[in-house]
Length: 559
Image 1 (cartoon, rainbow, N blue to C red):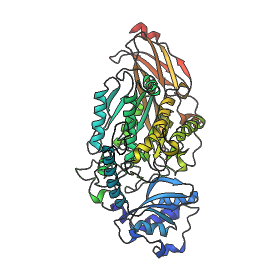
Image 2 (image 1 turned 180 degrees about the vertical axis):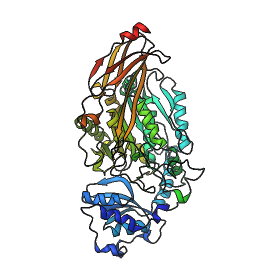
Image 3 (image 1 turned 60 degrees about the vertical axis):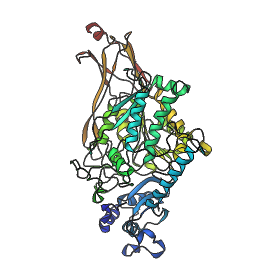
Image 4 (image 1 turned 120 degrees about the vertical axis):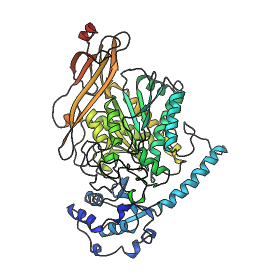
C-alpha cells in the first residue's frame, strides 16, 4: 500500500485554514513544537503506516477546525469525537500543531486488512465445512469483486425474467466501465406507474459492505417473492431499483488492493479523462472527486473541500462527474419516493438537513418517524445528517430537495470501512438485540413506506389505452454560492388496457420551494402518441399525501 501523495502538502498551509475558522481557533504553545513523546506512535516512526484515530472534538468549533485541515475524516463521529484516517507522521504532527488530542483505534490499517483476509478465508472454510451456516440470501462467503457484482446482477435478471430487469446507467465511468443496476417488480417490463424505492452502494470505494448489503436485498426480494407475504406485496405495489456499485473505478482499485483505502473516483485532472493505469499510480492515489460532495444541492458549502487532494474534494462544479450524473438521471427518470444510499461506518441512519445552519426540512415529522422506525430494526442511531458533521453536495442534498422523495444515508458498522466478511450476515439480519431484524427489516420498512400513499402523491384518471403519459418539471437548483443550475424531472408511463391509470408520484412542489416560502409548483402532464406527438397538455398540482384526477378527454378524442 502506497502513501498518497497529498500527504506531502505543507503543514503551515493547512494551519492557515484553522486560524481562519474564528471561534475556538486559538492554538496552544505546542504549535511551535513536534508531537510530545507521550503521543508518539508507531506511525510517527514510519510514514507509510496508516492509522485510524479517534480525535477529541468536544465542541462545534473543534469540529469546524478539524474539518478545515482537509484530513481524511471517516464517516464516524459522536458528540465529543471525530474519527480520522491518518497517513503517517505528517498528519499526526498537523493534528498536534492544531491542538488536537486523540486515541488510536487501529495503529496499522494495512496490517488490519491482512488480518481481515485471513479471517475471511477462515469464515469461508467454516461455511464449506458447515461449521456455520451461510445466512446471506445469495450464500456469499466473501467480498465481491466488481465483476462479481455485474455477473450477479445479470444472473438474477436471467433467472427471474418477469421480475428483474438489468439496467445500465446513462454514462460510463471515467475509466470506461458501465454502471449497472437491477429493477425488481412484478411484471417488471410493464410501464405501471408504481412508486420506486432506490437503494445504492459504493459511492465511496473503500466502503465494501455498502455494495454487499444492496445486492443481498435484491437476492432476498427475488428468492422470497411468493413466500414472504410482505415481499410479495412490495413487489406487487412498487418497483425496487438497486445499484450496488455507483463508483466502479474507485471500487475496483480498492477491492483489487491497488490502493485499499481509495475513497473517491478516478478524476486525476479536472475536465480530463484519465489515461490507462493513471488512477492506480501511487502519485495519483489521493486524486479524485468525492461523489458524495458533487451533487448540486448546496454544492460548494460546508464539509466539502476545494483541494483536489482532499478526501472530500467536491469537484470543479456540481454534477461534474459521471457517477453523480448517473444517479441524477436515474432519479429524474423515476418517481423515487424513498432512497437509501449505503455507506460505512458508524451505525447511523441519517436524514436531511446536512449542515447545522439549515432549518428543519418541511417534512421533519414524517422524515424523523421513518428514520426512527428503520433505526429501531438495525440498532443504529437515527439523527440529522449534520449531527455527524457538516456536509453539502451529498446525494440527499439534491434528491430530497429536488423531488420530495425521503432520502437517507445508512452508515453500517461500528468501527471499520470493510471489516471481516463474517460481519455482513450480522449487518443484514441483525445480531444480539436486533437478531432477526437488522438492515433487512430496515429495508423492508423503507420499501413499505414507498408504497404508502400518505408519503407520496397519486395522479389518477382516464385516457386512451397505449397512450404515453409524461410528467415533467423544469427548474433550477441553487448551489451554495447562489449559482442557479438547470434541472429537470421527467418520467413516463403507458395508459393500460381499459383506459384507467394510477400513477404514484412525488409531490409537485419541491421541499426547497416550500421551505423558502415560494408557494406551489405543478407537474406538466402530457398525453402523447407512441410516436411522441403531444395530444393534450395540462398542469397537475398535488401535495405529499394528496391525490388528483386528470381525465385526458382531449387525448382520448384525438388518439
